[in-house]
Length: 449
Image 1 (tube, rainbow, N blue to C red):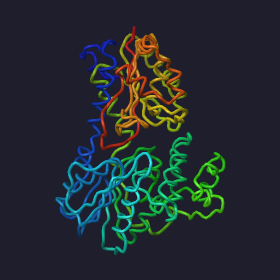
Image 2: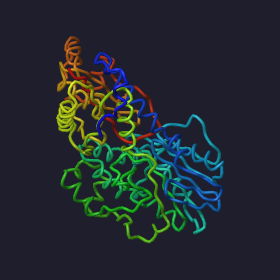
Image 3: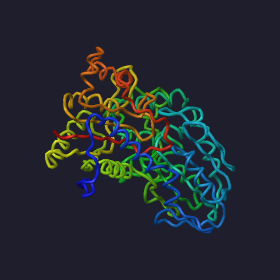
Image 4: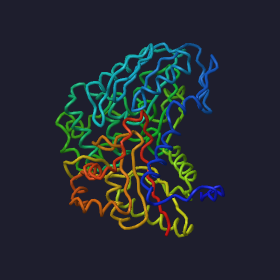
């Protein structure tokens, strides 16, 4: 996936503008994966059938709609527009209150990165909405990343919100990959792991989802409330024991793991999924492709690198740097851009403010110190970890500037405080919530000699 012949007519990018150019590529890519744009382009309504990509979903009567996750509000608004308002009723559970409500929907504000009372109330409203339906009824689920926290209800009503929050805190700060975290979440939930879909049976169901996980693992998105679950209850027990998590769980949850009283989730061979259809609207693949094209338009020879998931952020930074070296060598003297998606693991090791993207850039900045290179990493949802930023950008001068201010990069990494580091330098990316989430985007720029 090298550069195109049109590069010759584009002014050569300058290193002095490197950080600005990287930010521009990121923002241009984000514009290309706008939820409204994608839905209007890929969903068609002819008055009797809703077509989502290659999936046809007849609608003899207005559907009930359940939307949850970071993109829930936007997805519900656009679907309402596409269907000309033909929605019987709906529930939206999102991490923020809507600026504008559309008719027929009830709105709930769920918590993120940990569940809140709104998460539980919203999930309860959704379960009620899809209960007692008939075969001729239709349900459309609009699912997006963040749904695991935003949309939740424990299978055991005696589990308190405080215990549910602590359970999730143990999971997300322990360095486990997302697919393993969600195995544990599914088996503690009344809505995850296909249980919401089972509640809606025998109605016909369509799930339109925005994937924030590897595309071959769709049931991980929001912990798969509408999809059959490939994981098992035994796997859940084994994971908790192997990683020493059981002792860290609150007593009300620890009890279920010690006594083996969790209940199994519905599996792919369950006949109650026969009338369910699924369509992936957006994924990490889309934002990566958009970034490559945006970089080429700015004059970079651009290439998409390997898209690993669940790899330590330091290992990935070093691997990316090797790929950038190879790309630069293959196009000597030309500015190049390596585009990488996927997700990294970054255990919390201190009380600071930041997230995996800013930690990645902080570590990478040390690797490119003194070189004519730029690195950017950001989350497409507009939030990185517990910080208000979506990510950060650094170049070959970042470390020198930090040292002049008396900042120690290693200390900030150990304190999980990358946000404070980049905020002091003015190099955070601050997009605000994007109403989207297809995971992370990383850019590496090399400007040649």
